[in-house]
Image (cartoon, rainbow over all chains, first blue to last red; front, side, top):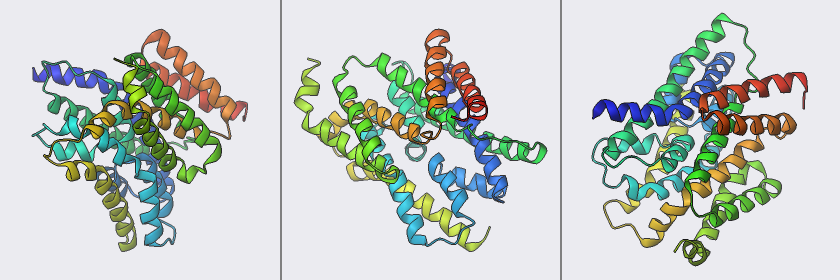
Length: 229
Length: 103
């Protein structure tokens, strides 16, 4: 059973592991470039564990910047994690094994992956969630190692590697669309997302669009849920 | 690592961890309100959509290369059902396109 759960977790987590591995290699390379040593880079991986914020961190570590700005940037960039927790409160509530780890490791991609897959009933969901979360984290850590090593060996130019994140989300979206029987809330959210993309400055995009989407979902509850009865 | 660097990392980690834990701590062992349960059903797919658009904001400069690579990614994934092939193939293509086409 243990081995089956592990095999299942690896199979499901593979897309995220691949994406994380590629992008964290870039993270390692940029860290080396910025004079951030491997220890500090891995410290960031194991405490912050948030791609966007970590890349920003690499920029900021060598710049004289106020702690208040760091706080504000961290808050705005990562406020979306509040919504992930909101969506997973019930899912994680019965967990008794290292629940804190599952919550800590809830990144964008881990969240997207976990909301797409349907864990077979015979598996212990707690264990599978922890395994998948751990596998993703491991890939991120491993890629950083490789990136730093590669940076020492090769003169490597990695512009464009972060596209892997976009590719990952395309794959996850296709999976989500395949899984869903109701579309009205996806279409509505997509509309909001695109309108915001053209009107809201990037720094506030996530916060504003997630708030608007939440308002839309709550206000339109009768229509959205009604569609599926 | 300097003291300042340590503090910066600590702030980033602290904020992220608090944000991740708040919903779970606030609701705790109590019964989850029906509204939150409903959000749990519909938020995930809605958030994924928002995230897709968000990451695409990054490549506005090279949107043509981006569009081509995203299409290729979707095609590979739909045809071969392998996320690794879709990811690796489209990323390599994107890196090539932005160097060759510069668009």
